[in-house]
Image (tube, rainbow, N blue to C red):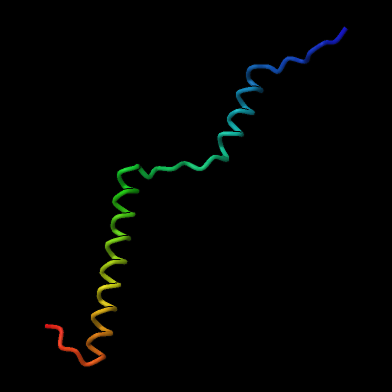
Length: 64
C-alpha cells in the first residue's frame, strides 16, 4: 500500500509565497515602452543628421 504525503495548506501557501518573492515586478506599461522606443529612435535620427551636417560643414560646404 502506497501512502501519499499530503502537504498542508499553510505549507503550500508558504512555498507559493517563496516562489513569487523571487519574481521581478515590471511596472513599465506598454504605452511607456512605445514612447521610450520612439524617443530613442528620434534621438538617433537627430544625432545622425547632426553628424552628417557637421561633416559637410567641415568639408567646406555652406549649408544655410
